[in-house]
Image 1 (cartoon, rainbow, N blue to C red):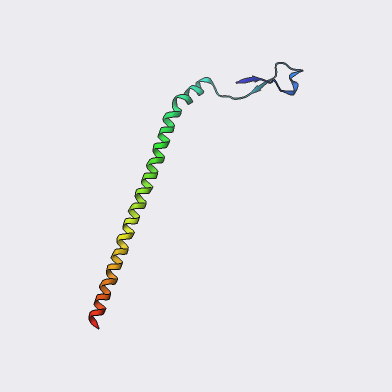
Image 2: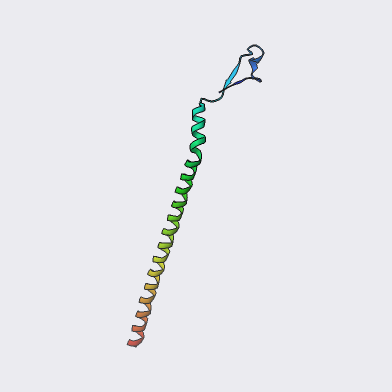
Length: 87
């Protein structure tokens, strides 16, 4: 795409001065318009699925940690009961 250089310093001496703006063709612009929305939807779906997977894994780790701590507490309680019976 070429735009006439209205404010180009040599405009007075060269009225045909033009600025080269982009090498994008009309076909490329059409393809971008066609595939922009589907690519964006795909990216959003990927990000949402990764976020959900991270949330699920965090919840799984939290549950396993709580079960581990409860098991440790049960062991301590059993040890205390045995020590009290021995005295």
